[in-house]
Length: 85
Image (cartoon, rainbow, N blue to C red; front, side, top):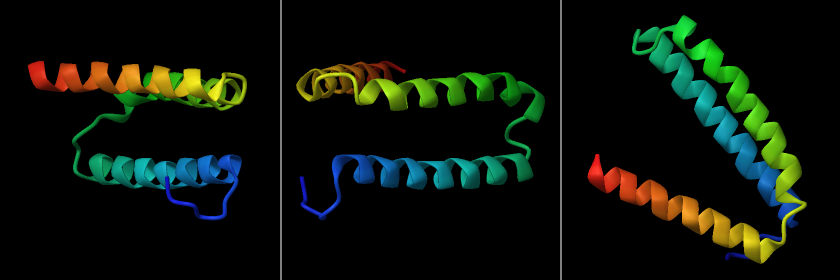
């Protein structure tokens, strides 16, 4: 990991803000190109926000080693799904 002088919380907040900006930008682009329908996306928005809020609280409660292992498992599962789809 590159040492940037940020605390773990600052680095996490920074990455979340970048992801938020990317999500908003891609949503606007997809809506403008009619690639997604707003009435299909709105029900998912609630669960996305709920997951983000819960994740923010849980990430500081879990042991860092356990959190890294859980994240690695999710990455492996996602990679396997991408290979077979």
